[in-house]
Image 1: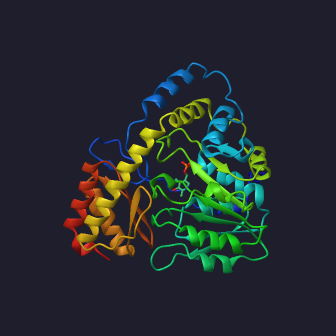
Image 2 (image 1 turned 180 degrees about the vertical axis):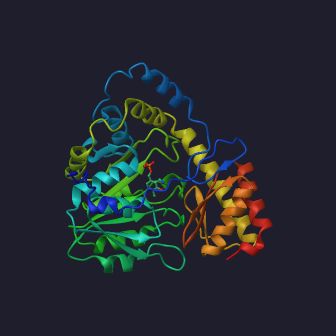
Image 3 (image 1 turned 90 degrees about the vertical axis):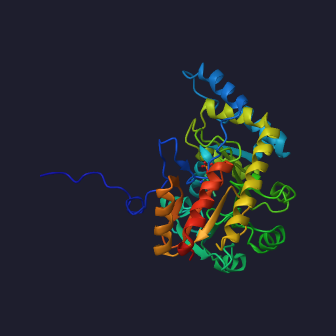
Length: 358
Ligand code: PMP
């Protein structure tokens, strides 16, 4: 008699796969589906990668001590307030796993980053989604109203992927003032470097709101998406819990050295980010001029809401122009801002297809 094969947990069997932005190996294709940096890696990063490669036979520092020290000094927080992981998505998986028992609830806006429901379900927790407002922003009063006895975590994404909209300082503070102390508020700031330079730095809120945790990444403005380094800034107890739930050695030595090197080039990172911001403003203004409705974006991408028919046709029009963008069933299309020539190609598609305007 044959024995039954090993079974996946039902929560895992039911998971949808994470759908990554499409890739192309053609030089002529503009890869605008993944919100990556279009700049070549920073020279200091390339040098650090080469150097660290000499020690590839050795395990990395388990807790990325040098990077921890550097980020602590940079942000003005204690090293014990930081926990690193393989991308901020890796840290988020640790966070949800560390806080949620099966059946606990995680609240987040929808549409937002598609890893949120996957990581929540993976932990056996229950996703509670709160629709964005008509102007594509987080509906913080509705998110507050959704908090119940089983809520463990509220995920805020600002700027929000994929809509680019951000949460204002006053509304964030108002929200934090009302969230019960036992509920962790995670502010995912993957795109913060593309926001206004004078925006509130939420690091300053950490001492006032011990249930706040910031999630940051080296993948976007720092150009290290391929190396996988992200981190949380939180209270020492939570950061300690994250270090305990880390898959051992999940930040490689090369990734740590590259992130340290990126921190030695902050002026260049700021210059590059400013260039992206200027291009984003140019593209959004031109798209609106052409009659498209585009929400304000504080990120390195912009959003076109579109029903399924328009979205499919729009993605096909971009495909035909060898531009890879990200289409989202039901909701719309997200387009990464890159170099001026690629951005001009995007605008040419929008100009050529007025019939696809929703
Ligand atoms: N948060 C948001 C909002 C994102 O869009 C992304 C990347 N798409 C991430 C987190 C994860 O970034 P990483 O794991 O590369 O740090």
